[in-house]
Every structure is written in C-alpha cells, then in structure tokens.
Image (cartoon, rainbow, N blue to C red; front, top):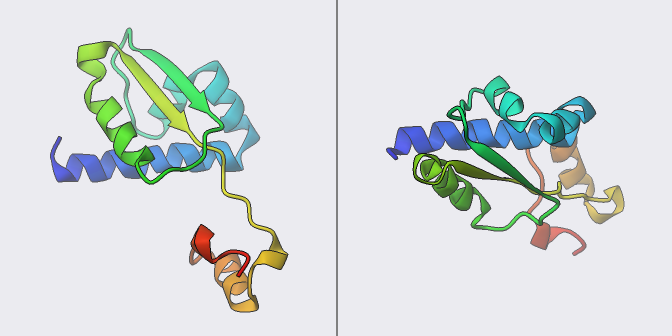
Length: 117
C-alpha cells in the first residue's frame, strides 16, 4: 500500500472510530452493519468479506498500524478484523486550565502521560 493510500485509509478509519465514540446511532450501526458504517466513511469492503468487530480495547501505539495491515490483507483472508478501541476519558480535574482550554477549543488533548501530574 502506498503512503497516500495509507494516509487516506488512516483518516477514514479514524473518522469511523470518532463517529462511534460521539454518536450513539453510529455505535449501533457498528454493531448491526459495520460494512455500511465503513462505506459511509468511504471505506468500501469487498462483497463477501466477513467483518469481525473488536471493541473496548485500549488504544495502543500499534493499533493504527495493525488496522492498516488488516485492511491490506482483506483480499487474501476474506475477513477484516475492525478494531474500535474505547475512548480515552479525562476528568476536568486532571487537566490544567490551559490544557482544558485547548481541549474545549478543539485543538487537541494532552498526552495520557501528562494527565494527573
């Protein structure tokens, strides 16, 4: 898979994960028809592909790379193991005023290792 394809897939996959975190309807759609949810975000799964949704795993440093690899192996395997980790949760008391302003402004979030300092 070329770098442009990897980047495009990563962006679309991240959009799927974000949608399931933020929209209860999308979360239900993930359970009922994951192929339709993927297609809605521009990820077309070949007909006949079995989609195994793996939920509620922590976000790990290799999760995205693993998902990209799984996407590249669909043709050979006929299956897609779709990882949908649980969202990171931060308590407002764990953030400094500056970090909270950044999160509220939509500019990002602190690294998990920075929370609770």
